[in-house]
Length: 427
Image 1 (cartoon, rainbow, N blue to C red):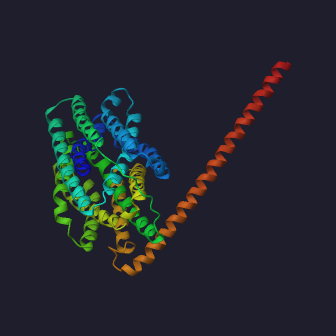
Image 2 (cartoon, one colour):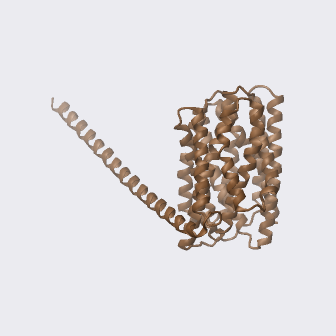
Image 3 (cartoon, one colour):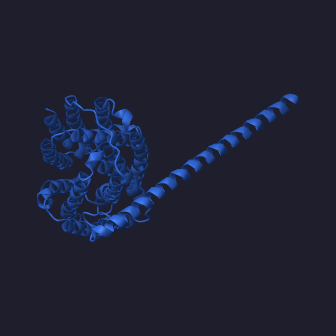
């Protein structure tokens, strides 16, 4: 029953997720926001989302006491916030609703991951993962086709309200299915240093990969609308083709060698350059299919690498969502720092090249020289941990210094006020 509920939840959620996530940048562009403004709202949204995800990771033991309660609460809240974007925009509250939507998605993803990995029977877990992936892809495709069709046949801003309303109905049905989940107690696993080194490098690879795809996801559709004057339904077709590729591509990539995965990432790094090189909007639809086809290989590779360290699932479930959020923040930050639109796509390409270098030199499964990869991976791990510790130390000291200065200024202001007040009374 639990496996079936997880599978049905993925089918119902896929339709909702596709419409709400793919439509958001198109909706913002249609409402008049520039690419820079879209990047900015994503940037500060994912900044607060990252802080929230780090908080969840820190206190995950508390959340795991009653995971079903928290899963249901966040699962429902996420759907409310995402589907309220058109209404929020009409009241000039998009700047508030969008960050809340992004933030509420984080714990939902973590708890669903925990639910899947709590299935003890390996064969049943594989079936659940396979059927969730297949039905979610099918539902995503239905959502993408619905989006393109309604954007084409309907007029005005009301079409976005219709689409988000349909997404809400599908999303609420998936929340009802969560009521049938029966979470088990999650055992807290303390990984060895070797496991820490492995998942640190895998997470760094995922961070770079997702940062690049975050840039593409947030800017590609608005780019063809703003720069190439394409209609919104054609921009939405980019997402449809990417969804179609995500359904077909796993069949091709499932049993490929690690060398093929490296080649796919190397080819993928050229695609951001192609995006701003093509001036014909219709060609971007075909380009979107090819891009998603190659991106699927990179995502399958990351799934295989995560499978090797799945025993640390309590950490990975929450840490992977933190990294996913951080990748969005990094992508939006890098893109927003660009002076020209073309530079945004160049930065995306550079992030993919950095991810490719990690597969060559630090991840033993994909490295050219696995023995040297263990040395390089430990060096990267040590460097990143030391950099993280130093950053935390500096942030803490700067924060304390800022608080002391604020307190000092406040005291001086109070003393000045009291002195003037006493002078006034004496006069």
